[in-house]
Amino acid sequence: MKNITFNFANRHALVTGGGQGIGFEISKGFLQAGAKVTIWDYSKDALAMAEKELAPFADRLSLTQVNVADWQSCSSASQKILDPLHILVNNAGITRDK
Image 1 (spheres, rainbow, N blue to C red):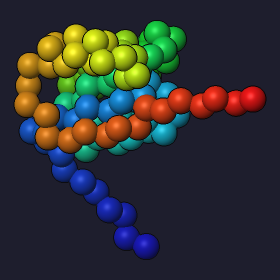
Image 2: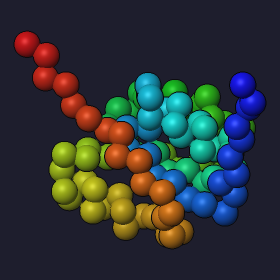
Image 3: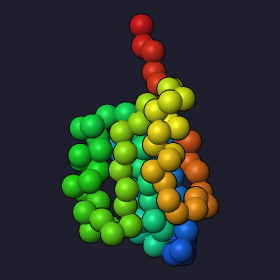
Image 4: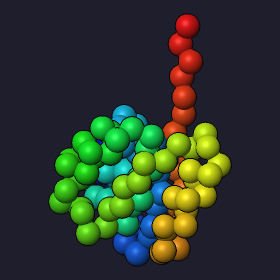
């Protein structure tokens, strides 16, 4: 099978839940394809790990602690986004195991 490459240069993606798991891999993929990426995640630890792992892309990376279940948290974080967004990945979710 042929490798598929994408070019997201001059594009800005916001990935919720982007600090870990699937969201982290999505964020990394966009960065590798040339996009500017804003990561929102609830976990400070996940954001710190993502910042370390994605350090080669620091010039195109923004990380913010956000609780997507809280409208005010999202509103405050969105005010900090200065560049136009082209892509939104609503990856954040919650699990309520019993």
